[in-house]
Length: 113
Length: 114
Image (tube, rainbow over all chains, first blue to last red; front, side, top):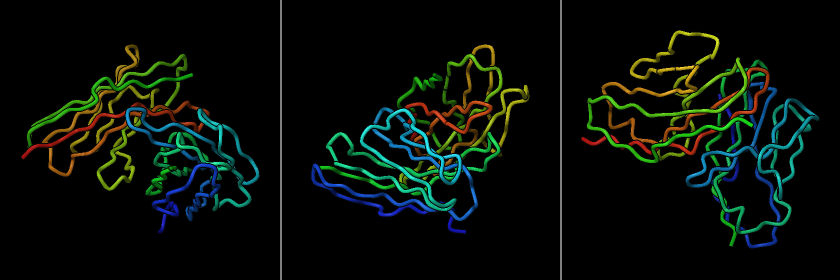
């Protein structure tokens, strides 16, 4: 089982550029989410989805867009990158039943210069 | 909104000894879930242990156990017989009963010394 696959693992962007972080899971999980991890702040929720066609905002959604056209995929789009978006990004998924915890991808380290 | 606080940014322990990591949380909910995640230098997030708030019995997974004090809103992690491979960041996390939104603490960096 591949679990949750994130690409790329590393990325450097210039301020103002756009890009998409890819996330795919093969466990038929309904719930998927994106977090960013910054030193001293833990993981903060950006956006999440409870199923195909349904997305919602988390704690820190500004500057990011998401869509969920299939159960498997949940891409995160940076529309116009800013240095404040330099972070490590994690995609996670879980079963629809609550309380089972998440399966995480291996993360993407993004640097915006 | 729920908040999760880990008051120990860094801790260290000698190999084979026991260490306890602290976590407190704030919520008005009665039913919820609590988790501890481990993040080694590889960056991968690994679920260590989970606790259901409506269960009074503390969860245990091999060398890892929790002390869940619901009234005090405290959820500490005890690692027994510490091993070098336990060196990692440890995150405490909270999830409401009817919501998959998980909130994390800032983390505790644990170093196991030989």
